[in-house]
Image (cartoon, rainbow, N blue to C red; front, side, top):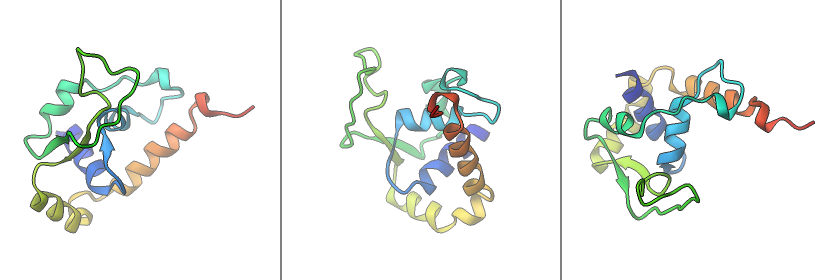
Length: 122
Protein backbone atom coordinates (compact mmCIF):
# COMPACT_ATOMS: atom_id res chain seq x y z
CA UNK A 1 0.00 0.00 0.00
CA UNK A 2 2.77 2.44 0.94
CA UNK A 3 4.52 1.80 -2.37
CA UNK A 4 1.35 2.71 -4.25
CA UNK A 5 0.90 5.95 -2.29
CA UNK A 6 4.51 6.90 -2.96
CA UNK A 7 4.12 6.19 -6.67
CA UNK A 8 0.95 8.26 -6.87
CA UNK A 9 2.61 11.13 -5.03
CA UNK A 10 5.61 11.14 -7.39
CA UNK A 11 3.38 11.15 -10.47
CA UNK A 12 1.10 13.83 -9.02
CA UNK A 13 3.88 16.14 -7.88
CA UNK A 14 6.19 15.76 -10.89
CA UNK A 15 6.81 18.85 -12.99
CA UNK A 16 7.21 16.67 -16.10
CA UNK A 17 6.31 13.10 -17.06
CA UNK A 18 8.25 10.51 -15.05
CA UNK A 19 9.53 7.52 -16.97
CA UNK A 20 9.29 3.99 -15.64
CA UNK A 21 12.99 3.69 -14.77
CA UNK A 22 12.92 7.02 -12.92
CA UNK A 23 9.90 6.00 -10.87
CA UNK A 24 11.42 2.63 -9.99
CA UNK A 25 14.63 4.32 -8.82
CA UNK A 26 12.72 6.98 -6.87
CA UNK A 27 10.64 4.34 -5.08
CA UNK A 28 13.77 2.32 -4.29
CA UNK A 29 15.82 5.01 -2.51
CA UNK A 30 16.13 4.67 1.24
CA UNK A 31 17.76 7.18 3.57
CA UNK A 32 20.62 4.84 4.51
CA UNK A 33 21.66 4.26 0.87
CA UNK A 34 25.15 5.55 0.11
CA UNK A 35 25.59 4.61 -3.56
CA UNK A 36 23.54 3.62 -6.58
CA UNK A 37 24.64 0.04 -5.95
CA UNK A 38 22.96 0.14 -2.52
CA UNK A 39 19.55 0.52 -4.12
CA UNK A 40 17.35 -2.53 -3.87
CA UNK A 41 15.31 -1.74 -6.97
CA UNK A 42 11.57 -2.21 -6.69
CA UNK A 43 10.38 -5.09 -8.86
CA UNK A 44 8.57 -3.79 -11.94
CA UNK A 45 5.70 -6.27 -11.56
CA UNK A 46 5.18 -5.35 -7.90
CA UNK A 47 5.32 -1.67 -8.77
CA UNK A 48 2.72 -2.16 -11.49
CA UNK A 49 0.39 -4.16 -9.25
CA UNK A 50 0.09 -1.43 -6.62
CA UNK A 51 -1.24 1.13 -9.07
CA UNK A 52 -4.67 -0.51 -9.04
CA UNK A 53 -5.59 0.77 -12.48
CA UNK A 54 -4.92 4.41 -11.65
CA UNK A 55 -1.67 4.62 -13.60
CA UNK A 56 -0.72 3.53 -17.08
CA UNK A 57 2.15 3.87 -19.52
CA UNK A 58 2.15 6.53 -22.20
CA UNK A 59 3.43 4.81 -25.36
CA UNK A 60 3.98 8.17 -27.05
CA UNK A 61 6.76 9.12 -24.65
CA UNK A 62 9.53 6.92 -25.99
CA UNK A 63 12.83 7.39 -24.24
CA UNK A 64 15.04 4.47 -25.19
CA UNK A 65 18.02 3.41 -23.10
CA UNK A 66 20.78 0.93 -23.75
CA UNK A 67 19.48 -1.34 -20.98
CA UNK A 68 16.18 -1.79 -22.82
CA UNK A 69 15.92 -5.36 -24.02
CA UNK A 70 13.35 -7.32 -26.00
CA UNK A 71 12.53 -9.28 -22.85
CA UNK A 72 11.80 -6.03 -21.01
CA UNK A 73 10.59 -3.60 -23.70
CA UNK A 74 8.79 -1.23 -21.29
CA UNK A 75 11.69 -0.52 -19.00
CA UNK A 76 12.71 3.12 -19.34
CA UNK A 77 10.71 3.76 -22.50
CA UNK A 78 7.33 5.00 -21.40
CA UNK A 79 6.29 7.73 -19.03
CA UNK A 80 3.90 6.76 -16.27
CA UNK A 81 0.63 8.68 -16.38
CA UNK A 82 -2.83 8.58 -14.88
CA UNK A 83 -5.25 6.38 -16.81
CA UNK A 84 -7.84 9.15 -16.98
CA UNK A 85 -7.46 12.94 -17.14
CA UNK A 86 -10.14 13.31 -14.45
CA UNK A 87 -8.03 11.22 -12.05
CA UNK A 88 -5.01 13.41 -12.75
CA UNK A 89 -7.02 16.58 -12.19
CA UNK A 90 -8.47 15.23 -8.93
CA UNK A 91 -5.06 14.17 -7.63
CA UNK A 92 -3.44 17.50 -8.47
CA UNK A 93 -6.32 19.50 -7.01
CA UNK A 94 -6.33 17.46 -3.77
CA UNK A 95 -2.61 16.65 -3.48
CA UNK A 96 -2.12 18.65 -0.29
CA UNK A 97 -4.90 16.65 1.42
CA UNK A 98 -3.96 13.24 0.01
CA UNK A 99 -0.16 13.38 0.19
CA UNK A 100 0.56 15.24 3.41
CA UNK A 101 4.35 14.91 3.42
CA UNK A 102 4.96 14.21 -0.28
CA UNK A 103 7.06 17.32 -0.92
CA UNK A 104 9.25 16.54 2.08
CA UNK A 105 9.63 12.86 1.15
CA UNK A 106 10.47 13.72 -2.46
CA UNK A 107 13.02 16.29 -1.27
CA UNK A 108 14.63 13.72 1.07
CA UNK A 109 14.81 11.22 -1.78
CA UNK A 110 16.43 13.75 -4.10
CA UNK A 111 18.91 14.90 -1.44
CA UNK A 112 19.78 11.29 -0.61
CA UNK A 113 20.55 10.67 -4.29
CA UNK A 114 22.61 13.85 -4.56
CA UNK A 115 24.66 12.74 -1.55
CA UNK A 116 25.52 9.37 -3.15
CA UNK A 117 29.24 8.67 -3.30
CA UNK A 118 28.79 8.11 -7.06
CA UNK A 119 28.20 11.84 -7.50
CA UNK A 120 30.91 13.23 -5.23
CA UNK A 121 33.47 15.48 -6.83
CA UNK A 122 36.95 15.07 -5.47
